[in-house]
Image (cartoon, rainbow, N blue to C red; front, side):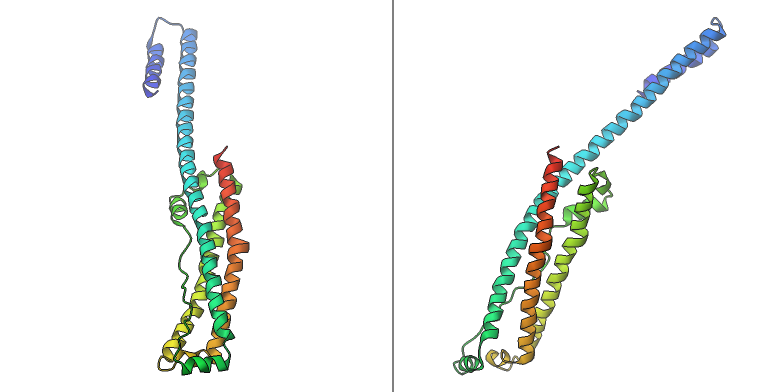
Length: 235
């Protein structure tokens, strides 16, 4: 394309220098050559833009495919974490239900009541999103509704999961601290301590709240986002 532009530019130069042509003929030839050059430049710009746009959309398609896989994995992890919360809460509730008589019997028989332990860490997949966002390519997504849904999920709902899990872990570690402080006492005695029992009560409440956040907020958003991505990929 560049060679063609150079060739027609040379023709214009030669036309101007040609003394055999009349001024009118020169003007006509120059106008034709300029028209050809303008068309060539315009076509070149359009082809470049089209190629760049196609490449951008190919990157978007790969990103959305990876994101769909991440979201489907997130949904599975949310279900797994929810089961762990329920399992731990059941264990805590059994401890709180122990009567002073039962605790005394456990103490005298040297039996052990195990405290359920499940610390919740980072469970959501954010690598693909963070990489695409940090490279400045989020703007390549042309569907504004889909783009806003993706941003909301990763900048609002994913952090909410991390926050509620952190609160839960903080109360769990308070239980650990209390157990360490009373390491010289039988566990049965510790379980009758009002402060320890209150901490466990809050642990159960937070666990139930986190299940609600998983079920009513984050998981529905992930499911809806998967549907939107599938719709975009099938266009």
